Image (cartoon, rainbow, N blue to C red; front, side, top):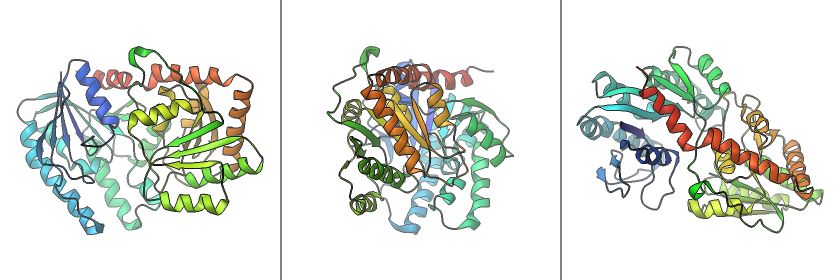
Length: 397
């Protein structure tokens, strides 16, 4: 099968692999021929065909070769990427037809290329992977300030997914929100939670040596909309109650300085910030931790499913999922026996959940949750499972 992936995020030089990297590699390992068109607007790349030392994957970059700063610069970066998609990208894709095209939210940034390829008969079937309800989520967390942009941007996003043969949603809550938010999108949906590659070779789980003190880890981007202030306030509650728990926050981002300042203001001695790590180093650190933390912000209406849940499960690390009421991620993790849920924005409930898992560790029963987390990954969250579900769309006539 010939597979085309159109994405703005794909690992380049000195960059960690991402979900689409894992997907492309899994398709290639399954014997498929994989092409990737990258319209990256955040990292400058040479335009055209890229060197990729993985058999079965050909990467073509169509984004800017120089990334501009500022609001106008960002707009120009996207315009240049859009032009590249319909020139370099279209030319590279028309060499022979594809059985399947996969593209993701934010769909408007694919600039209609997947639909054009479909109309031209160059793609037989297409799957839109819906991770992000744009633009409502960005408006509600303050990343987009101009409310008047809501209607036109929502229209563009609806248009980007309208011609997809299937829309991959992360959870049942995501499917329900899709039907109310994008009412003119009536395509079929498939359930594909965020996925991860397997950190263990040969399927053999290596638990690793745990840190001396009970450690809760958060790994991810330190940016607006992550709810990390709630985690820091929960850390303060744990510290004040003399609960022997360390909080480890791993990652980089625009909010890092303000978060460190908040930790200092709260007088936290149980919280450590580490810079972002290469994936394998991060996974080793994760396996040495006792639990993972997934946290979002309160006051948002679209349901989220933090992808770090999948990384925790892949490494057999139980977790606390602190998400907004609209999300079903916490209840899904609890139903799998892989962790506990808490309410976004509620540092007291987050601290209580962490204490409960600490008590389970002291009682010697937390390991059972770790095994169930790994079982959940193997059954539902692995990249091989995602490829299997997405592939079925291409095989449907």
